Image 1 (cartoon, rainbow, N blue to C red):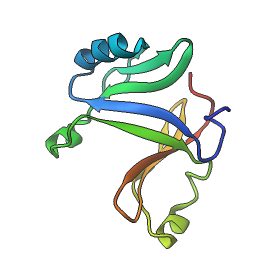
Image 2: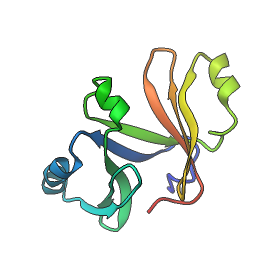
Image 3: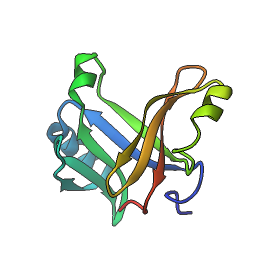
Length: 131
């Protein structure tokens, strides 16, 4: 199954942490991951690979998350082809968009939604398969 193209599939996992360089050795030793550093304007992004397959990433927490007291955390992305168009239906069924939609150059368009119980989920429409 190509999770990057399958509507509703979990397709990416991302760690936001206060110190990516300290977190990487833990996960690579524990899980046998390979990583590839990608320089980004806000700091390096580390693509996580299992073999040759890109499965996630590790990044520094944005300053506003640190300032708000957010602890390091893992977030999951679900492929949602309609990421651009579904603000009204999400509101109608009880959810809301709390971030985005936002373009990620070379990746696609993402948004963070909150379900009626308050759980956050990242939804992404890929412009091309990751990795």
